[in-house]
Length: 166
Image (tube, rainbow, N blue to C red; front, side, top):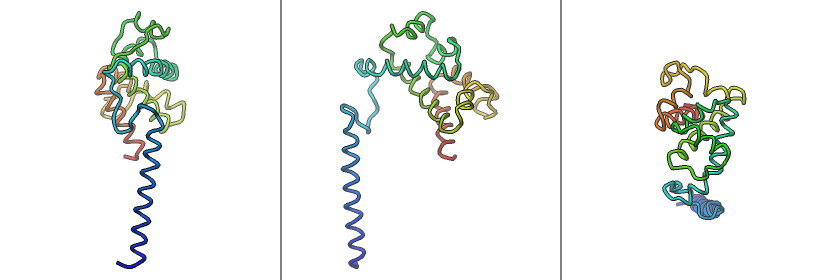
């Protein structure tokens, strides 16, 4: 091995080591959170911590997308009017795992749309008829309302694939 090759290897090893130290420090910046594992939504303290932000995010997305209350309730899995209005008035404090998962997927869809398109199209896209075979000419909103979490996941995957150029 030549001296130049040895120096190159040493540089790469040092660079990788320093990168790992920086990443480990970055990961530790949020106390109690590990980048390697998903949040355990079965734990009440996690749901209690995440619910207020999830509710706030859901209501903002519903406002941006100009969703009717019936549509928003359907996206949450068909909750009752009373439960939904309690949620809107912030008197419902802790969401269950299913609703937190649905809201998390909605937030991902919202983010992907705003990366892919301008604000007007990003906000309208969910309610527009779509020619993608997955939607069968229906709107993505109706698709996820009918299909539940598996449909949310497919829409999220579709948008993430578009973001990566596939």
